[in-house]
Image (cartoon, rainbow, N blue to C red; front, top):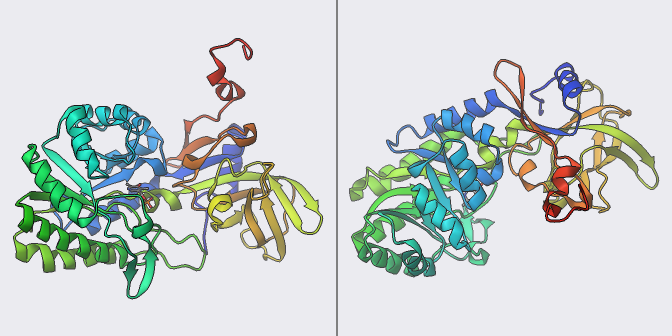
Length: 417
Ligand SMILES: *Cc1c(COP(=O)(O)O)cnc(C)c1O
């Protein structure tokens, strides 16, 4: 069963200072999980996790991860700027963008980030824009379906990302001619995988490709970036990934493929987002209204603008009613936000304890791709973000938006002064 990392008493204390809705993050959980990941890959000398900033773009969270030894994976100008402000520089930053604006690439180059090219045509473009750096990475797309034991995991052939294998071989040769010295390979083939086999299978594909690229092009391959995609169990009865089994699976492939080919010094990189943060975030919201029509509705003060995944993907997010953890779930509700948009439901036909006005709900696993995907539809304002520190105290790490923030882009006229 899923247990919140805050109690009703803790929540009430926080709410007296910061009204709901808000996102809260568990620093202790984030740190422990990051340490386990690094331990699971400690067999690899150059291992580094580049946290995918898009999952939880908050400088205070980035600083916590930096203290644990992580770098950052950015894909836009503002993500680069936030990373810089959080103290990251140079090769602590991976720039994995696509359809990249000139301005973004120029900043990445200026900051000394590792540039991960998404497309063959970007070689020429980068060369003309600002020159080819010494260290360069290219993103691979094998096409077709990505399968593990005959089960289709995802459909890279339909994905917009990456080079084909032929383009990669040709591209490495061109990059080498243009002065690149150190090479990396990157691929992201399946999202939110809840299996210990995803990374080891991906690693095998990339390790074999690395051997082939080395033999065909003579390029010095320094790192292989397994990117994101290691998932978390959103369902209460789902078994999570075992990061130590995953690390061990990648180690086996490494020993089998890279070591015999004289590539035992290759570094393994990851760009995990969801795995690093999702379980360590809650969206906390208060029950405001009830409605009895053809169904039973419980209306809360958060809405899809605070957490888009259920509305967008039909994703399950577990809900705990604080203080009613041991009350039987014998009432069925649709839990809804207030957008004028019928998919604004955090849960449909969910069995919960009988709800009352003022009940505080914890919506679980919102630490990644939660706040980050927020938006302002219906003029709804983004919530605050709060960090639950290791000593049990709380720190505001982003204030809630105000109407002035919403109207800030009309500052060229005087209508909202
Ligand atoms: C989104 C993304 C990630 C992180 O993915 P998760 O599923 O959150 O682990 C990593 N790398 C790139 C390039 C991405 O676009």
